[in-house]
Image (cartoon, rainbow, N blue to C red; front, side, top):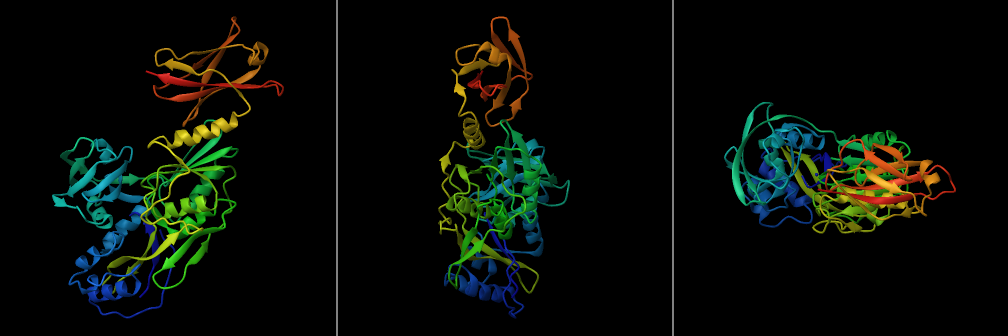
Length: 455
């Protein structure tokens, strides 16, 4: 028997792994039973080995152990590589079917007004309740421009409705990046694919001079274990990556794989309830080794690995064969990882970014907060004992959006010894900013004020 890879995610994580070869009978059921009996972690239920069909056998194992056809496996692997034809969603298994965790911009799901949180309960009239995501992915994907009919349950309204979508090629960047205000770099990793380590390094290189980094692993369901070792190796002080425990054998510790380009400033990692598997491996290493500060919500809690095993008839068995822990034996499976700083859902970037900006402003004088509305956004700042008129005229002025970019502004000097700062574009209600006045003189102290935009 040749085991190709170890996966570790909610729908995956992987490292190349081989065992000695065995010869099995051509009948897949006998073959699967033999493999499950010897390798399933922690131990196969006795009744499972008496099953008369592979489907019945798999139902008695955990949710991550799946029997797949060759085509179903190819669809599954393509999701790790962020390459597929489908409806433009990320999903997570749910007892009612598949829950949508995010919607890709411009995709069929967005055009059909589907939302994150919606649950797909039927595909082309077939109930998918209780089915694995690997199985149902093949129903959602297909040939380009073909149609798929979905039944959707929306928990927010408790209503069920039908939608017919046309499958399209979904172009998904695995790494997203942008420069946030105050020279803070933002990098989002969507999947631990085989090239993720290089892609994150390229993103770091493309943004020189950053004072801090936000590394977003929200809704990242995992990927290859070897990639997780490389991503952990982006941290200069990383030593170990994870501890591995198979059904037979002692605990084994695996090292981080050092990367040529590494994080060159403090890192904040973002998590949510859909951060799973290889992502959790990375977060656990960061937490145990104090490599980064973690913001968000408790992670999914998938701390087991799966082997990918080709069977004699060409089908594939993805089988849970081991558990992994943080370097200091941090227990992940069925528990998840608690963040250092818990934030409201959707506020992770804003909170992490805000903390970075306040660190940059620690030697500045804080002024009274300013509230503006969308109809009148010009901001006036008068000379005071904290900042003289002379210093104000020789200062650089910035408007940093908390959780966003530095906004373009025009600055006018009023005869009343005040600055009038006007954004080049209207600021949206509900957004927050720091107005920063940085004197060019080293002897003068800068000031800042928090600006909140109301309706």
